[in-house]
Image (tube, rainbow, N blue to C red; front, side):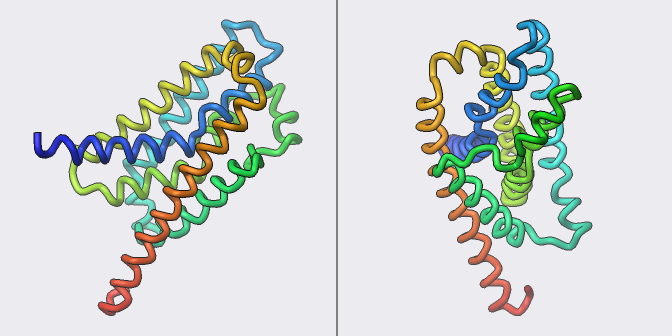
Length: 216
């Protein structure tokens, strides 16, 4: 029971970090706008494909991310700082209602007649640079196999929730409306900015320690 509390705390931290960066509510409204002319059955099929692809990409980078960093010669702490700055920018845009900055309207219009569930829904809306850097940093800071599994479970749980949201997207969008979406998105942006500050602070602190020790 003594180890249960730290594990639960780590799960809550990992789940919250992944959830706010995926931002299912914002993704839901983009998905609704891009599937407005499709039958319910086809819409749900595209939702399943997009979620599976985004989940697969996120899990891949969670597992292989350390190898990618090692190949490129990038330390986890350097990624913490860079990823933290990226997440803070995204969080700031969410708080100021500047949503979907990674996808332009022209790109959305162009992808309407193509595999839009791949781009822009799965990538980069659900699984973009922010999520990729987040899962790599989480895995890099993990100290046990249990924590690694917890991160993978968190990824799968967040995307399972996102799929449920996509499945009922039309009902949810009518219920929340534009104002409700803005309120939730701004709150998530605040949480994301706070997580980003923590990542930047920890990364700079560790880099400073290595610099003082002469090993950076």
